[in-house]
Structure formats: C-alpha cells, structure tokens
Amino acid sequence: MPLAMTSEVRAQAGTQVDYTTAVTPTVSLRGIEELTLNPANEVEVLMDMTTGMAGGSQAVMKGISGAGSMSGWGSYEHLAYWLDNLLGQATPTGAFIRSYAVPVTTAPTPRILSLVKGTSAVGAYQLVGALLQSFTMRFEQRSQLQISGDLIGVKLQADTLEALAIPAVNPIMSQHLSGFKWDAWTGTMGTTALDDCYIRFAEFVITPDRQSRPCFGTLSADQYIENPWEGTLELGLEFNSTTKADVDAIVGGLTQRQVQMTATDTAARTLKLQFAGTVVDDVNIFDDDDGVVTVNVKLQSTYHTTFANWFKAVLTNAVATLT
Image (tube, rainbow, N blue to C red; front, side, top):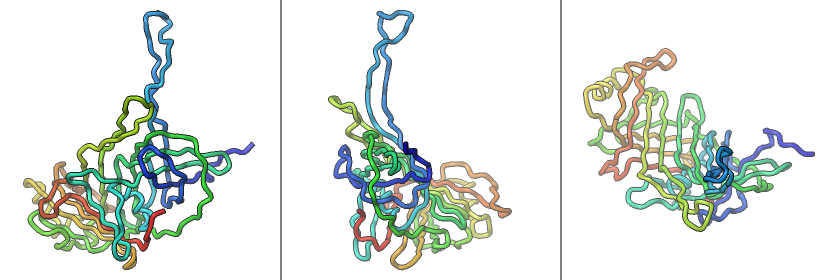
C-alpha cells in the first residue's frame, strides 16, 4: 500500500477563468516552503425540545469554503503569480515589465488560482478560487526575499498532481537591493538617496481583507468582497548622524515619509517597491542589530495625492506569459 512522505509533497497552480470553477494545474510553483490548505466548513448539531437531556440530535451542513496560508521565498519569475493574485493581473509591457498598485476607486481583477498540494503516489487536494487575504514581503541582510500570506477560497476538493516540469527561476536576494530612497512627504517619490547600510530590514504588509460571501441556493461561498485596503511598512533604521533627524521628527510629532526600494539582478530582472505612509506607532529608543543601535519604524499606509496611491510595484522578469 503506497504511503505519502513529506518529501514527496508538491505545490502546483493553475489560473482560473472565474472564482468558482477549478482548473487543472499548469505550473509547479517555485519558492513555496510551506503551503497550508484547510476546509473552512460550518457544521452544527441542532437542538430542539425532543431529546431533552441528551442534547442535540440533528446535524446540518451550513456552509462550505476553503482557507489556507503560504510562506517561502520570492523569485523574479514567480513573484508575479502572487502579485497578480493580490493586486490584479498585470499585462506586461516592453521588456516584460509588470506594473502594480493597490486599488483606489475600483477593486482589481486578480489572477484567481487553483492551488494544489499533495503527492503523486497517494493524491492531492485543491483550494478552488484561492485569493490572498494578506501578503507580506520581508527583506533581511544576507537573505532571500521572504514572502508569506493568508488565503481564502471557494472550497477544498480532492485532486491529483500533474506531471509538470520544474521551471528555472532566479531568487530575489538581499545583495540585489540598492538605491534606497527616503523622501519627505512634500517631496517626490524616489528622489532622496539613503545609504544601503542604513536599512537593516524592511517588511511590507498589504492587506485587501478579502472575505468569502455566501449566497442562497448553494453551500459554497461563491462570491467574495474586499474591504478598504490597508498596509504597513516596517523598517529597521541604523541610528546615526543622518537618521537621527528622522528619529527627532518622529519623537517630536507627526511624521510621514515616502520610501522606494529597488532590487536589481540584471537589466531583465528587477523589482521596485514604493510605499507612502505615516508613523502611527510609538518607536522604541533603542533597538539592537548585532551590536549596532537601531530604531524600528512602522509606517501606516496613507494615500499621497501626488504619488496618487500608497503602494506601487514594478516587476521585470523576462517572462512573457504566466502559464
């Protein structure tokens, strides 16, 4: 009798044409280290005045939906799947440049995924209509880009893995980061340079807060809604004669900043992230980064009228079409 070993578990994905219709996976997703898929079903045992002290006697299924989470590392090639899923399916222009932004007036049209996890020997399960409910990108020294997110979906169902090739990808590494920009609120995004050593870590969290929405006539939640998007950018700033002015401003009152980070491997593989926000949490004086004094600053997403948003991303990856 075949058994399933953890080393045999694979993750695959396919792009759906609508939220409720599953598709056969077409790509082996690279970079996923952990993928959790769960049935988020609602079952209740009803009570009435017939069984008395015995308690409930009538079991009912109230609803079916799915949920999950993912974590791993990001590559120039396959980060596009997650950014498409989060921010809306981008159409590449020029040298395969994909541009993204959080929505301002209209909800995006995301790349809806069928996510499959399992083994070839025993079987697999598919999260139909997988959509990111939140997404985190974290950069640390001497490390690959770390990504993670929470997922919602229509339902979880049995499936099988496909015989798919393992695609070549290029991880986004900390040594690719350069050209940090740290601009005043009244300035222009991407203008004022900040030394590469002054940032010790950076963590972007984007939250569309998508929620499954049930309807009459079906057990599954066949629709979803999005609440107003929120986000944060947390930075570890080295405390020195340059950044002290920023810490002084934070301690002294309202502080707003525009931040730009760019990762470049080659001209054909780049990632630019831009964030505008307000410091709303108290800072700790001080933090420690391997013996160096730092100050951790968290920016809360704030719409900037000139930048016309609070988060944008541009990804170049030499991939014409995502399968």
